[in-house]
Amino acid sequence: MHSLPDPRAVPQQRAGRWKMLLVLAMCAAPVVASYFTFYVVKPSGSAYGELIAPAVDMPADLPLTDLQGRPVTPASLRGQWLLTVVQGSDCPAACERQLFVQRQLREMLGKERPRVDKLWLIPDTGTPRVEVLAAVTQKGAEVTVLRVPAEQLAAWLKPAEGRSLSDHFFIIDPMNRWMERAPAEPEPKKLQADLSKLLKASASWDTAGR
Image 1 (tube, rainbow, N blue to C red):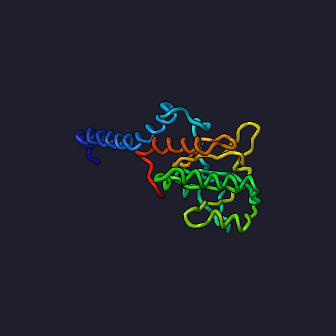
Image 2: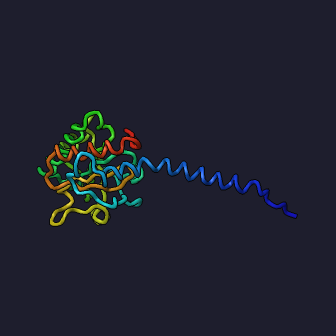
Image 3: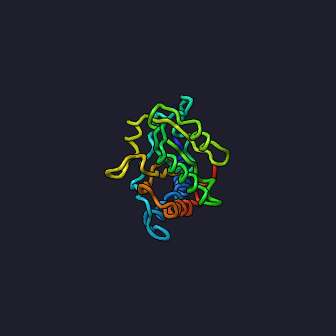
């Protein structure tokens, strides 16, 4: 015959479940609080860019590859704020200006800049010019450059009405969620202020480096 369960174990099991739920709630609380602070309280004034609410997850199966054609998993990008641009491999003058502003925006963050990575998404199969690659891969100014099919990219990121993806900076949070779109041709100081507010609001749970 099977022995009956010890009735004293039931309260212990329930207590264990409650403890587990409490731990999960404590882990989630800083994240929830930081987003509440930024989206609802909006410290130091409203956002300059357009907040995306709810934030949109980067598809787990987004087919990213590096310039050598090696696959890169979206999950590997988690853990950092991503200041993202979308530009073709031909990278005309407007693209070069945007990459320069991207670099300057990160530098303007001062001691907080290690918490932000620069990401360049290329929606075609070409390779940027040697001089452009040299500029974005020099030590201290490295940009993560990845290819992604245009159709899949357009299903995730969206431009403002009448604009194209290449007109904007997109801000991706450390949980791989698109949460802000900067205006076309943004004022660097105002966009830097948004980044600073985001970093301040997430200071309790976001850490530098992956």
